[in-house]
Image (cartoon, rainbow over all chains, first blue to last red; front, side, top):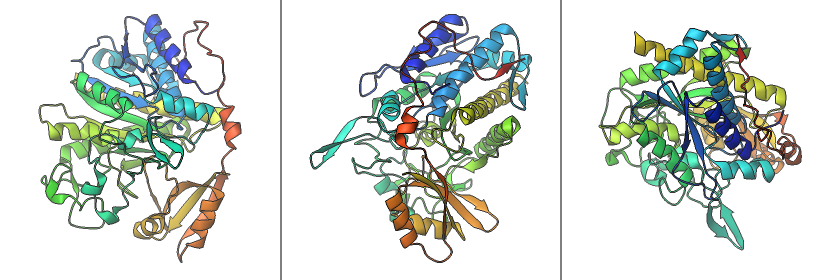
Length: 360
Length: 98
């Protein structure tokens, strides 16, 4: 077995939509990649549409993390096959019976974007396996052209990190177009691959959960990545310019990112659901908690997803998660399969949990 | 050669201060894990970066190489050129249907 190429991912998604046409919808996202590759997502559920209760699941934002796109293709295939054949699903020691699979597809729409950054994946698999960003030409150094924006620093949440964060915060971001890892891009949302994810959140107006699958810490993180969470001072939030230059220090009493206590409780609980489910699969122990720990991050997808309803209260509240799967970016075959099972189980576990609550 | 290294300090502040401006690869989200005798993170470093890290290491900081990543050429061989789905076989997941 080998890792999927981007071409294989596209073909696999199209085949799944053809085979399971009554339970899927193929979504061609509005923006081509920088190098003009089409990007596809798949909507899974007995009923689909923009007004369905939705969980959005994204993979492949970071090119070198080869497992998540493969895992999301595998998960999609599993759910559809089990649903049609009337079976349950087992991943190691984690088991979901057929009633659970039926309930998930009856109650939820899962919108799965297996590979958000196809140009990066192609480059990572053909040229530089450590490549992380997209492939936008963004600047030059001497005679060399510099390529790539870190899509997970490109979303419009505290994107202007020089302004938003304390100088000593060590925020994980760079405004150097030649930075190999964390260049934030020329403007917030500048990249077509970023805008596709924004489009998904805009289009599926009843999205309640957003999971961005990465590698390889391993952990299940929830909001916020900007600063330590606090639940009592709503004025301390990323939109409030009074606190510009003060964010990102975990030991101070000056600023903490506000999150409603009910949201924090639910984000904690669902993170634990995913972590506990992963442990059942093969016994690995993922960290569970807030994504801010060592340094803050700006412009990340999970914080963008959750921050949207703060900027516009008319939008639905979306709990944001980042799953960091496995221990390596490109593990060997045997480990790849184990990590795929962990990711799949965690996401079925999440869907099972939230679908159950909606029917009671 | 890229190495995966475990960098440990007595507390989060010491770890943060040590790594600030180190320019090592901390993965997609810079994270730390607490252990009974301190806190650590995992980083990827090339040989020259590892040398620089060791040179600036202060008391209480430990740096341990936990793994040497396979060479880039080896990893690039982990994909195949043929599209395995072109024959029309429906993709199947790794979950057991039971």
